[in-house]
Amino acid sequence: MKIKTDEITSVIKQEIEQFSAELEISEVGRVVEVGDGIARIYGLSNAMSGELLEFETKGGTVMGQVMNLELDTVGAIIYGDYLAVCEGDTVKSTNNLLEIPAGEAMLGRVVDPLGKPMDGGPPIDTGGVTQKLDIVAPGIAFRQPVTEPMQTGIKAIDSMIPVGRGQRELIIGDRKTGKTAIAVDTIINQRDWWGTPDAVVCVYVAIGQKESTVAGVVETLREHGAMDYTIVVSASAADPAPLQYIAPYAGCAMAEYFMWQGQEGKTPKHVLCVYDDLTKQAHAYRQLSLLLRRPPGREAYPGDVFYLHSRLLERSTKLSDKYGGGSITALPIIETQEGDVSAYIPTNVISITDGQIYLQPELFAAGTRPAINVGISVSRVGGNAQIKAMKEVAGSLRLDLAAYRELEAFAQLGTELDVSSQRQLDRGARMVQLLKQNQYIPFNAIDQCISIFTGSKGFLDDIDLDHVHAFEADLIELFKSSKKDLRDKLVETKSFKGLEDEFKAAVRDFKANWAPPTASND
Image 1: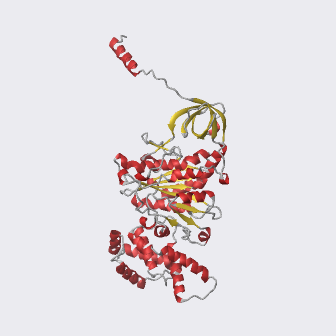
Image 2 (image 1 turned 120 degrees about the horizontal axis):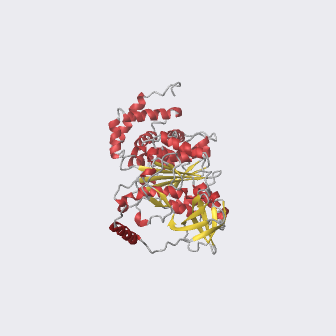
Image 3 (image 1 turned 135 degrees about the vertical axis):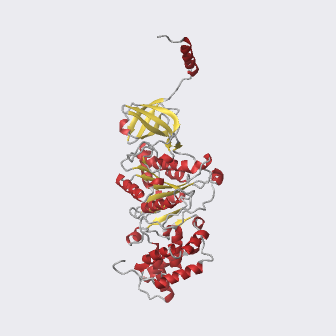
């Protein structure tokens, strides 16, 4: 078999052209101590803080990240199976920071904080697109004021504690008071915008929860058609502390891919991030920090635990139009013990966020759900994140309900009340009843406005408390059928100005002919 000389020559020439005389230098160290998700490494004198590391173990490569830079050693956290890492194992530096897969392919999937699928589905192909796990939050020049509403579909929140796109609103309360329910309802409510220019991508981050609980949330989202636009990031209670620590940052990094799309000429998206919950992330970080011998401070937390949450939540913003106008809205969740909002972690997160929704166990037990205490719940964005119609009907609602609660406490003493006080009690009781809402049934913003308009104008004052919801449901149905033209005007103008008399007449006529449901149908 003859081989042509010119072919050999061309192959040799190609090899010579591709030959590189550069040496590939990688710094190598050795593990001197390992345990509970952390390792001490000797020999990586040039390692950077936050640098990604490769642990060469008998079972393969395990990834880690530099946390402590000390005089002789480097303290690192281990992602994945830390039990496979042994003393004496080789560790290589990568000169890279940790990056997380991101992109449209992540939608509808359940992943771990490193972006690996956990739902039994096919591998996720993001086309090599990644986002840095930890970045410096956008500065003031990148931002614009929060003015667009992020509709939660929950009457009590949209009317009194409105959340805007780009805001950080804390959900806080004891365990089993409905914190996750508010977040899940808000995700389900974004279904109406999916497929429109106002579409909202949702990222639900579960930290330190039981896997069965996370599976229940995923199933609920799937049942209500919300998984199409949702990414679920799960670091369960069974996962190592390092994964629980990075889970919220991973969720935020995935969200930032959609927010920054405007810079690439694509349509930027609005993103809703739920961190459920940051108390458990603080516990995981405390565990890692104390194992790495970081000095404990107040209540045995490391001194930088405030920075832990601030550098996460500061990444939520409404970008200016120059940078595409995308946004990330954060709903961090914090669990309190016996309602102690003045404890260390709750105090920290309250001071970072733009308001809080406080859920009270006593209200929850009494059947007021969502169990929102309007006295200490607040939105620092306020009416800027409401449509005009809602501002008009709900402007005094908070004060009226607060006054009702005080009057209710006074009336329990058995004191005889004058006519005006009794009228105020009747109105307050019906407004409280009106604001009660079943789970997974978010309300359209216009329907909320009509409902609160009816209550605030006194049309419910003589309706039996048990029939308030039936009256409301029939009234909303009226405005979707025979009075649809009037509702359409409200949708168009988003204000009751010029329409108030028509609405009053419509409600008055409806009430005159309305009969409460019978006991068998109630």
